[in-house]
Amino acid sequence: MLCFFIDTQYYMLEPKHVALKYPSVLPGQKTVPPGLALVIIPTFNEAENIGRLLSELADRYPLTLDILVIDDNSSDGTADIVRSMQLMTRGLYLMMRSQKLGLGTAYIAGFGYALQKGYRYIIEMDADYSHDPVVIQRFMDAMCSSHLVIGSRYMNNTVNVVNWPLGRLILSKMASIYTRLVTGMPVADPTSGFKCFSAEVLRALNFDRINSQGYSFQIEMNFRVWKKGFSITEIPIVFVDRSVGKSKMSRKNIREAVWIVWWLKIKSIIGLL
Ligand SMILES: Nc1nc2c(ncn2[C@@H]2O[C@H](COP(=O)(O)OP(=O)(O)OP(=O)(O)O)[C@@H](O)[C@H]2O)c(=O)[nH]1
Ligand SMILES: [Mg+2]
Image 1 (cartoon, rainbow, N blue to C red):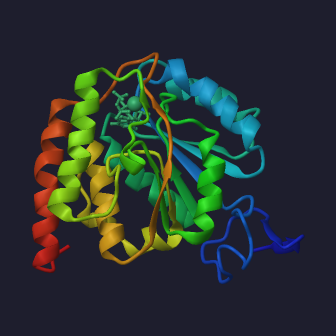
Image 2 (image 1 turned 45 degrees about the vertical axis):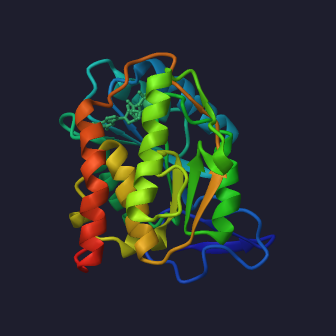
């Protein structure tokens, strides 16, 4: 591994290292160094969104971020768009899976990739432009003092959601309150899918034990991180409903979220988490 030091920041040369010996953030540093963060974007039929999102990420963070798109064999040409953008974008990777296998397994595959390649900061982001790329810089800053940073729509009793039907908003807010009541986890927006983990946190989790999808996947990840005693910080975000493409969230995902919190709570009480 080649690593050199300029202006108190570490810079990495390819190939990325697997085990880093130095601390992820140097004392006094206000943001994470370039080359250590990977944004994971799972996609299923996001051809209308993915090109614009990748262009914006590449323009805003040309050196800071690498991007991994995990596509479940979308029939609308999503992967072809990513492949064509790879020709002109540094640090853009594509993982193809044979069929729609769920959001949770996509992220777990991405986490495995990130750890294997030695990334220190792993960001989850939707492809549908509900998550503003500008916020990633704030994640990078907040990661200097936290193990998990969650982009929260519901901090300080506010609701920062644009264009959601009232029913959807109530459902999401109720899910947050319900999760907090059952689990006691001090997270205002436990179902948010815009967040950043440190590699240390992901390495501490046993991915084989995680099998929830959708909203439950986010709840389960937060719960396991919290139970392991890692620090969690929420930063306020504004969530904007997708303007194009179809939602993949199903009633099954909602039902799963109802019982998963009890499953997690009971497993943690009997020491089987
Ligand atoms: N690879 C992969 N990606 C998925 C799968 N299901 C959803 N996604 C992606 O995960 C992200 C979130 O899915 P959405 O359908 O936007 O879910 P959501 O944001 O909770 O719901 P909406 O607000 O209704 O859009 C999007 O980028 C989807 O393309 C899946 O099974 N596999
Ligand atoms: Mg969405």
